[in-house]
Length: 371
Image (cartoon, rainbow, N blue to C red; front, side):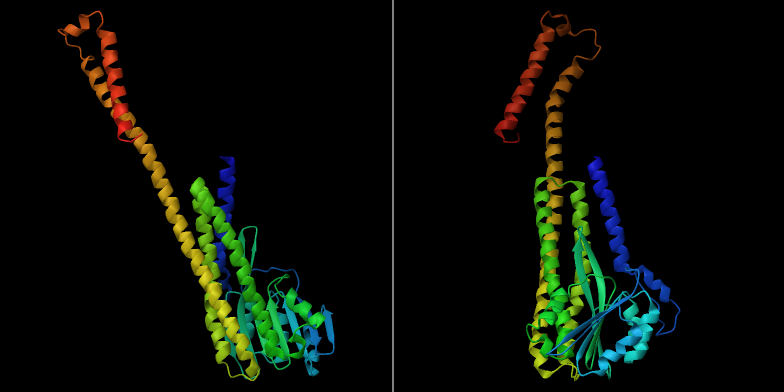
């Protein structure tokens, strides 16, 4: 019982955290403020803002950590490609300074600070703004982080909420010079970052699939109340995952249709592949949701069958005692003239009749395969 109590308490905390995440309760900070107000909306997930810069071309690569926001503009003066990765969104002054350096619209800066955005693409005269959700699955909890990309001429700026991401493979390819990444322009770098996030969706889906398989085994073996709560938690996590994946189809389609010069014509084949991956991820989410719906039906059926089995046993016990109670009721009446009460063998005779009735009914139940 203590183990189940701890499990239920943990599930309640996870459900509350997930509800806060989905509802975006912290968005009330912006109520009543004019458009373009720079206010961080969301949870502060790191103590300080860190800026990491990778400046490269086909021949060389330079990395700089701990760069100040004011110094980022200098990297874009050379004919190289610059990737500026900003970790931490809780300091509006940093975003404002970067916005002034790269000419970002105030509404773009506002959206970067608001971590409750849905995945989207916005095209401006000098840059493109992309919002995408980066996912992680740790300790049976789905973690959602917003990543914003600014795609400009010669630079890409990525904004993420906390340290740790899925871009290690991209960094390794830049350092080793493998593939076409070091030979390509900013559009291909932005595609590579988005593709890394989308590919990670399949890793998350595989982990959720394993959790679903374990739940299925537990539902069939022992449909306890805690299993029902875990199914409910997993359904809500899939709803959050679907909320992140569903707009990806629209976003990638918008990238394909975009006529911006920041995306070269040869990028269409890669964007089509990105669109296909987003569709596959969405199909996998829908499949898992159907499986969970089936698990819920199996759980409810198991509870119903167990209740039916209990009621069956109780009904048979009650049926066995109906005639016995009837006989006991007759001889429990206080009438004066009952000849059987004076017989020497009346008591064992009545007991024999009652035992015979019980045995006969049990045999009848067995013949009917009710036992």
